[in-house]
Amino acid sequence: MPIPSAIKLHKASKLLELRYGDQQYQLPAEFLRVHSPSAEVQGHGKPILQTGKLHVALIGLEPAGNYALKLIFDDGHDSGLFTWDYLYQLATRQTELWQDYLDTLAAAGKSRDPDVSPVRLML
Image (tube, rainbow, N blue to C red; front, side, top):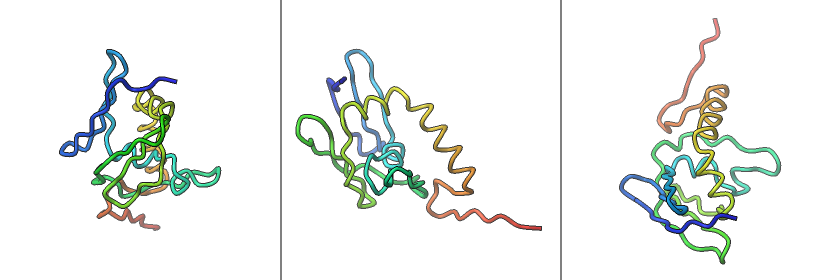
């Protein structure tokens, strides 16, 4: 189980920086929010698509024992415990996971922007 050698929260740029040896990853708050391991996001075996999280920010983080981080988002979400293994998976698979999320969002006709409500005209 890879454990980050350094963790930095960049509030202004809404990024969580993780360092593993000489590898550095920057995970956007929106990416982390829509991939939260919480039951609210993961459901009970069926993930719940998160929409309108474009502007979400990370406002804090707390250690959860020796195995995870609790991330605190400005939309009130703070129930996901990001284990070291899960954070490493998110970091190393970020491009693939983000594209999967964007594809799922598009297929559902939903938006990342909370101020946009896509409307489909049926002719």
